[in-house]
Length: 223
Image (cartoon, rainbow, N blue to C red; front, top):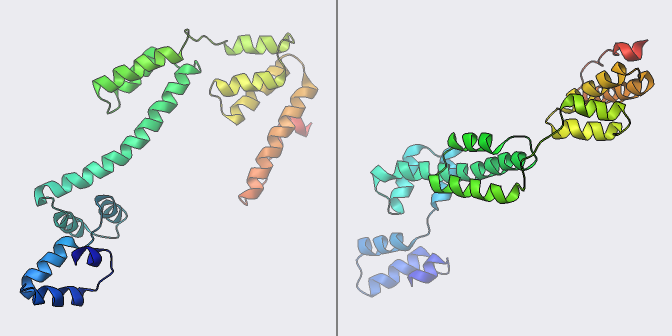
């Protein structure tokens, strides 16, 4: 009878009546029904508590119904929070690892960053060992001056210079500024104006989208 009740196939009153016919007193029948009733999961309880839909007392009470002792209920809520943080931590470590593979930081820097994160010793060793297989050889990158030289000597196009700056961690605005500096330094004024115009057009679009004043023309376009 209890299984059909738990699956909402039989209502509460019917279960109580049938149990009384079998000799169960009402109090014992209620306790049996409550024992088999559906309950919130730990994840549900923590979710309600985290968003403020239910207070801590409610959360502790619900966890008690699941069998957790009162002095453990708070730790259960914290464990659920840390379990969610663990998934974010994995994403963070994966992102840092990608930067090593791309040559933006060294393996030593990666190891130092791992030391500051809540990782176990075994997990850290496995991360470093895995990274050695992904990094076939130590990465070295051109300096900014070398990249600019490659462009001015005709070895790189402006798109290749832009890709280098992006890979090296420069923001879109900083990348375009450096491209302008490079072009102006080597008297490529018309090309610099094209880059400046593109950059300005993007700023205007962003300002219009946010309802902000149109930014003033840069000197290179105002002349």
